Length: 287
Image (cartoon, rainbow, N blue to C red; front, top):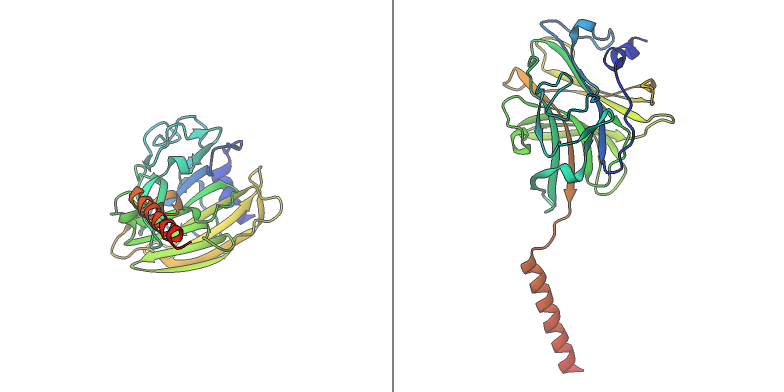
């Protein structure tokens, strides 16, 4: 029951959004707890006073507006009209170019970032951040995640490479979909397990929690939910890692990434056609 309470505070006002045909992923709700100068133990559940923001995306005003209509987010990508029926759409058509992958693929992303206007997430405080997604299995090379990142990096992928944590659902180019905790701090580390939603689950809740004041440790937890936001199965502990390296604050965001296979430039097509023409000419002369 104490674990269920951790969800109950945030989800008491939640609404269920209908599926949207053009959405790649749908964010159902977002929650931030912050216990100023005090621990936030996972087992005890957060006190009501620690609830800093809950957004059920049900006011019809798309980000960067928050639940109170004020600007509560920084955004990357197209969020115009993204909020509808209690969800926010993250889709390929809304993403922007980020970088070129090591395999030459084009990397695109979309981000909804908490702008700390209600108080920074600080090493000196206990805090937890989480997001509920409608259950989705990403296509190969795609993922969605909850992210904690360098407080001083800009809201671009380049700015996160120094130090960030991703708790994410990702499908690799080949193989099964994974539930992963990714730690990027100069050298990256990755722990993961198969993404296996239990029967009856329609949503997944991804959460980071910083339990002890002054500590650099942050833990990742996952729980599956049904349409009524009741837990389906137990909490899944994804691991603990360090976050703060020279900083005392962090940023929280929701991200979606997709990799698109590289497409040859028009000049490349001309070279291919030219080569084919030469081969055809040689074949005709020798036949």
